Image 1 (cartoon, rainbow, N blue to C red):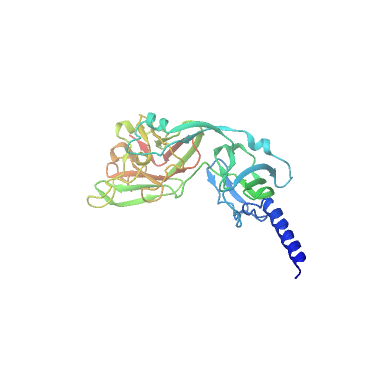
Image 2 (cartoon, rainbow, N blue to C red; image 1 turned 30 degrees about the vertical axis):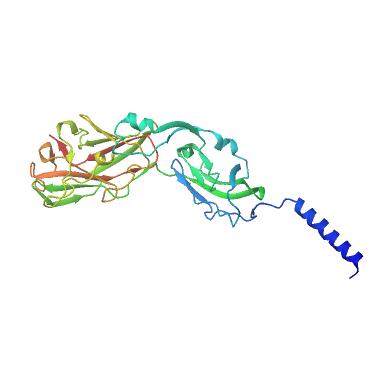
Length: 334
């Protein structure tokens, strides 16, 4: 190799290297095939829901994820305005501690009211988050665009995710109710009455304001049993020296319990309510002591010899006030 050719080669190498050094290379990777594994994401209207995270398909993190547009999946219509309406909602600013947060003032100190849209995208994980603001939105299928930005750049992903808004009740009753007739002094002996001729349980979602459950027990004539006078009691557990001594009821789950002549009221502070089961699912157990009623068929259940034990189940998913009315159709107050 001649000296002149070698000198030209070195100069060209230095020039190309310099040009390469001046060009900024992308800091990471942004895939074109990001996706949601849930398709569609099912959202029960009015309920809190957090979807699984976006599959980044190897894209570099951290990344910022933004919701761009929402469309009706059938018509293609842009429905951004529909989902932009914000509703007032209380959010937690601290961790609830049942041992110390024993007053409404203590609860209020750990909550604040904010205005939130019914749907949001978590800007870090891409999870779709819904709240009870979806309650009044039209049911149906929707799709949405995302903008994702990381060190490699920014890209809009059209119609990357789908979700369905589904009509759903504000509460559920996981198990069927019954009225158990048990012998006075013998908790182990009894019969479960389950037919519509024996009982009716009506549960109403009255409003979205005060978070409480109103509970009433009513005889066949519409006469309400008086909890303040002891006409409604806790149902004892079975066995010798049982632990706990009574089966669970609303008082065991509620933040605050108030007893009136015609009802009981239970204030709650978290959704779902009850948050976790204390045993036997989400069943609630009560007793109408024998001295406060007569059963229609006195041959089967003579007065003063049998207690009536209403049982029902309940779990709320939407905030607000609920009323539970348990009617015993073959029992009369006395």
